[in-house]
Structures are given as C-alpha cells and as structure tokens.
Image 1 (cartoon, rainbow, N blue to C red):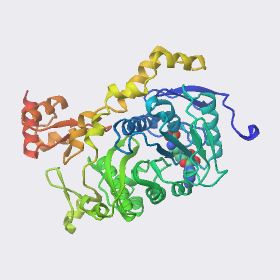
Image 2: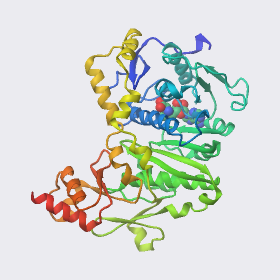
Image 3: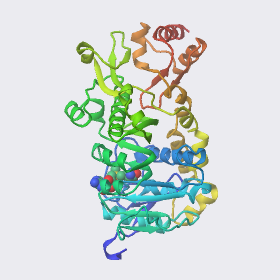
Length: 448
Ligand SMILES: C[S@@+](CC[C@H](N)C(=O)[O-])C[C@H]1O[C@@H](n2cnc3c(N)ncnc32)[C@H](O)[C@@H]1O
C-alpha cells in the first residue's frame, strides 16, 4: 500500500458494530445506537449505521449456513464476495464474528471501485485484526488475473467494477449492497454464483419499489404499485419477482430465505440453484396483489384489466422466508454470535474504544432489534399467509378501535389458527386465519 495515497487510520474514532471495531472518519459523528433512515452523510469512508441490523443478519445467516450445511457440504470452503464492500464492515464482521469452528472454511473477497474505501478497509483490518489470524493463500482458480487483488489476513480485496468481479469466479455467497437500485448488478450476480449459491441484495430505492415513484418503478422493475398499507410488502415482492425472473433467464431457480422491508431499504436473502426445470416454473410464483372492497387482498396470477386497476404487480406471490432458517434467528442466537464477551470488550477498550456500560446495553438492544419478531413469524412467512395493518382493522371490523396486538394473537390462536407480528416499522399482523375469523377476533377482543 502506498502510504502517501492512502487514508490514515487516525485521526478518527472507534465504534463497535457487533464484535467488530470500526474506525470512523473524524468528521463522522459517533453513531447513535438506534439509527434510523439513510445515513446523514455518505461517501468514501462513511459508515451507514442504519445498515448495521442488515449486516448483523448477514453474519447470522452465514453462520447458520456453515453450521447447518444448507449451502455447501461440511468441510467444503465457502467462497463469499461482498461485491460493493465500501469500507468493508460486512466482510470484517464475517471474519470476526462467524464462530471460530467455521473460520477456516471461509474464503472472503471484498470488492469496490473506490480505492479510498478499500484502503480504509485494509488499514482497519490491519489495525484491528480478528482475535485469531486466519490467513490462507488466495485460491488460484478463483482469482484469475494476477495482480488484481491483495490478500490481507483472510480478506482478499479487489478494485474492479463489481460486474467484472462477479463474472470472474463462481462464488457461493454474493452480497450486493449498492447505493439505490441493484438492477444494474443482478444479471452479473446471478451468473457469477456457483451451481448452488446464496444471494443477498439490498435496495434503497424504496420510492420506486413501493410505486410512490411510478415511472422509476415501471422502468426498473416493470411493475405497477399502489401506495397503501401493503406497499412495504409489495416492495419486497416486486424486487423478489425481478430477482426470480432474472435468475430464470440464466436457468436458475430461487428459494427465498429471508425478505424484509427494513425502514429505508429492502433486503432479500435467497438461495439460487441451477435448474432449468425449476427455472421454467418461475411464473407460477409471479402474480398480482388485487385489493378487494373490504380492504383485504388476494394474489391472482392472471388478473382482468379491471382487477389490474386495483392491483399491484407483477410481483412474487410465493413464500418469503425459509421457516427453519428464519426460525433460528432468535434474540439468544444474535447475542451469542455477535455480542462481545467481557474479554473481547476489554481488548477493544485497550485499543482505544470508549465504551460505557450504557453503550453495552444499547448495543445488545440493537442486536436484539435486528432479529426482533423474525423467529416468531418464521413458520407463517414460510407458507401462504395474509397481512393486516393494525390501523386497518377497526374499519374492517366496524369496531372504531383496534385491540391490543397480543390480545388479537391470543384470540386467533384460540380459534385454531396462527398469528404473529411482522418485522416492519409498521404494526402488521401475519396470519393464516380466514378473514371472517380475523374480523370476529377483532370484535371479540375490542369488547373486553
Ligand atoms: C452502499 S455502499 C456499500 C456499503 C457496504 N456494503 C457496507 O455494508 O458498508 C456502495 C458501494 O458501491 C461502490 N460502487 C458503486 N458502483 C460500483 C461498481 N460498479 N463496482 C464496484 N463498486 C461500486 C461504491 O464505491 C460504494 O462503496
């Protein structure tokens, strides 16, 4: 690295995300523990703390894949690429926080076009390395152009257009976290995946995905939206529809593992398998959400022109999560994997982290928040279900007020169905109960 051209690790200040020390630019404010919305400042070297929960879930999913062998065979190495890595907080968290038993199987590549951000990553990783060194040789069959990358303590960095890096090797895990829409990178990401791979995609262009920006939605996603209570779920399903049809064009089939609308962005995590046969049936999972007069909706595959008027789509109408994998994303698990031990915290403080007792409490709360409601909703989200916004229920049931959510869940369960809260900024109920049962339960609980 040329010292004259690269940023210094100091001046700046230290922050802890999960168990990983993050070096922030001196002109970036110390993040709050509950950041919401897009970062106030962006650009090379700035960390977006609002993306911390998505990075935390990425660590959990990767640890789960390695522990439960649902992506690669036991003892096989996992080749993971963060194609738009910026300062590399995600790849450093993979290296620091995936349990030690699996570290030697991880082959991590971090790519970005921005040399300043890459240097920031290398310097941070050098100054604040993982507790145990995990160095290994680059795999020569994976990194094809000699001199295009650099290996540093278990992280291989490359400075390329992401589309080039994606196509150069077969990765089993690809993360796409662009500014705005991921559409420009999707073809290369799907093509760059191994025969069985995992793709994680972030999209921050929520105005386009929800349909509040109709022109962009149509151009980028070929879809039409309605901005109502279901807009967040539509955004998730519109992006998933595009990922699934893009995969099908390359003879691949997708299986969603987790799909969330997280405040200001949509985040999808899908397994992608090469299978012409399954790719050919992709349109069975694509349809429209048609609103009915009573405020409910149905998914329809071939709507009439009149139905299209009160519909959003085309979008993914299949299940959104894998019940088993999402079911393991509990608060206990996130604290076990991503929360620092006393020794780890003391070691971080010795390196200069200023961290009060209250910081530890807030950080643990933030970790729990990153998986809140997920495991409870996993079974329902893994099969056909319906959503209700709590604010819509009084009108639907003619009660003038909504019951408490927990009371409603209890009534639905007593009626023999399931109900849970959806992880969303808005209060949504996810249930498999028929509409008349839900309405009856709302009326019953409002009288109490
Ligand atoms: C939202 S940031 C990534 C944040 C990062 N994944 C994290 O968790 O901190 C998007 C990054 O994409 C990079 N970028 C944009 N276009 C690119 C391209 N065509 N190829 C490679 N990197 C690109 C930018 O330099 C920027 O660092």
